[in-house]
Image (tube, rainbow, N blue to C red; front, side):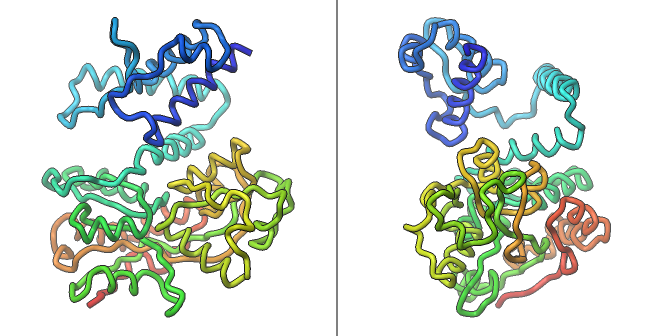
Length: 363
């Protein structure tokens, strides 16, 4: 029991750090307090703290307790720091490979885990030269693009902040981002993104570039134990739903689809339980915290979950037209219009790329 409990305690604290309940620099509860809370021995708490310290997300200060680490410095890492990080990475890889996981499974899991650290908006318009700040909807293809962009053009980088489609466009409008990713459905025109861009950028010329079209649907546990077949099943009392946050394109699509189906939010158990990314939705289902969520086929497939397709939606990149001819943005367009890019995105699963790289101007 103790072997399981210390891991559960560490995971609980880790989740509190990831969701912002515990912030960089915050002091963790005392060992005495957690011993009473979890009804366990001090050694169990110490072991949980040791695991968190080994992961590099907390640090112990003699006489001052254990604290969440501050944000890493922006300066270039020293060779020693880089060597330490590489050593930790290789240890993790060795343990994972020894447990029978394939390199592809490990890579997918690492990417999805990293997504949870990107669900924070950029707070400052300041950026290093040759850096494009992305803000917007969570997507596996945008992860691929950011990594490939820096690999092909090492002088450029595109750090990602996932805050939902509407949040991304607002960040772009407020000069807190340079490029936004969105998939917002406008029910009146039955079109995506353009109506929202016109409302948020009146009189300003904007460029839309198609990243891909994505398969959106219900994500369920392997084997579909609750025998879910479509949206009407979300209103069943025995079905626990996990939702996306307000302002996300997925949430916009869901609310419109529910309204058209005559289903009210109060009929859905778990409707108000919101997650910031498709990865978070899948994690909740994997951990049996929910039976079903709405999300992407690509993320469900990466984690071995089943998927019920509901629609295909376009995912677009948006930025001011005056940036189109700059070296960094020209490089992104060049990448998106290459045939091997379409093949790479399609290989993620759940994507259609016939219009990838297509450019549209919005006056």
